[in-house]
Structure formats: structure tokens, C-alpha cells
Amino acid sequence: MEWKFSTIEKVGRIAIVRFDRGLAANPLSLEAMQELTAIAKHFDEDLETSVIVLTGRADNFSMGFDLKDPGSLAMRTAPLQKRRKLLQTGPRMCKAWEDLEQMTICAIEGWCVGGGVALAVSLDLRVMAEGSTLYVSEIERGMNMSWNSVPRFVNLCGPAKSKRVVVMAERVGAERALDWGLADEVTPKGGAMAKAMEMAERIASLPPVQVRMCKRDVDVAAKALNHAVSFMDLDQYALSQTSNDYQEGVASFLEKRPPNWTGS
Image (cartoon, helix red, strand yellow):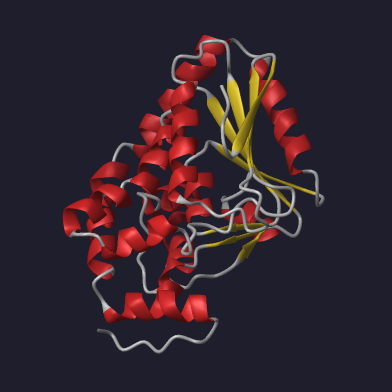
């Protein structure tokens, strides 16, 4: 199957998905997110693959949702019912990857921002190269962090560090991410993919059905309440879109100037 922004390579029981929009920022447009969702669904019936490695560009994983994408304007201006439908694109992408029975590994080089982080934490494991950075910038744009990602942060690094990521918008480099539990391995720059493949080869060497069953056991134990505590974040985002601070956050980002928050 041909994909517009991605390629899929199979190596035995390992599948490698490379996502690249051809832009240095590798941003997530609506179309790109729909494609990544379809790719995850593509693996639903694949009984031959034990592990999927997802990576972005060699310079950046993804700088997050593309605020310049025409779909972004539709998200901000459409009637509420249409906006709610469009706003489901990101969380559906993340859930499609999280729900896969295969083990999933994210190989991160460079920047991984906003929606890119939400996607990364929906996978099972993360490998970061030295110099790469996780950055949840939503609050600095007048937004709440959504896509059902907050409980995933809490699962990985606990409530206090999640607040530093989501509320304080701290930039988390690879070594700190490893210390906090957001990353599982750190490699020299340019080495994230090689390490992810090493881990994938170990998984692929194990009995495939048991791999899937054991993954599900861990996920159910760790994430049983995730949906219950995050199902409202989409509507919180839709509400945020109606605020002056949201408009100011987006405008100041696009205009490259400091925002002027008013609490309205």
C-alpha cells in the first residue's frame, strides 16, 4: 500500500514506520494524523508482526500539530459539532497506536513537541537520542493538553513531574526523560533507530502470542482508569478555543512575539 507521508518496511517480525512530511518541523496536519491512524489500523489484522518501530525524520521527530495547516483553521472556526468531530483526529490517532496488540517502540531524534509527545507516549517504549527534547507547549498557546495524554504522562512519570511537563511546559532533554521514566533508553545522537531495532529484535525473538498477551496484561493493570479521567479533555479543549487567551496564544506563536494573557 502507498502512503503519502510514511513508509513501512518489514524485517521478519519487525515493522518499521517512518513518518516524514518533507518539512524540517515534520508537523502533524489533519491529513497526516489520519494517515498515521490508518497505518495503525493496517496492523490490526497483521498476525506476522510482533513489534512496530515508529520514527520521524533524522533531524526532528515532530514539532507537533501544524497550526498553519488549513485544517487547523477549521478546528478553530467550525460550529461546535463539527469542531468536536475534527478535534477527535489526534486522540483517535494516539488510541489507534496504543490499542495495537504488537509491541510499539518510538525512536526520537531532535524535537518532539506537543502532539508529537502525545503520540510518543501512546507507544509502549521510547528511545531518545542525545540532544533530543520532549516539549509540551500547549499551555503556552492558551490550550490544555488533550488527546487523552495526561494519564499516560502520569502512568510514566507520576503526578508531580507530569505537572512540570504539562503545566510548566518544561523542556525535557533525553537524559532527564530517562531519569523521569518518559524515555527507556538514551543513545548518542543519530543512534535512536539502531537502539530501537536492537530492542525490537529482542521482542521479535520471543513467542509472538505470549508477547501480545503479556503486553495486554501490563496495559490493563496500568491504564484501567485512563479513559475515565481524560474523556473530557476534548471538550475542555473546545471550550479553551472560545477564550481570548487561546486566540492570543495562537496569534503570538504565529507572529513570533510574547503573549499577553488576560484570563478571558
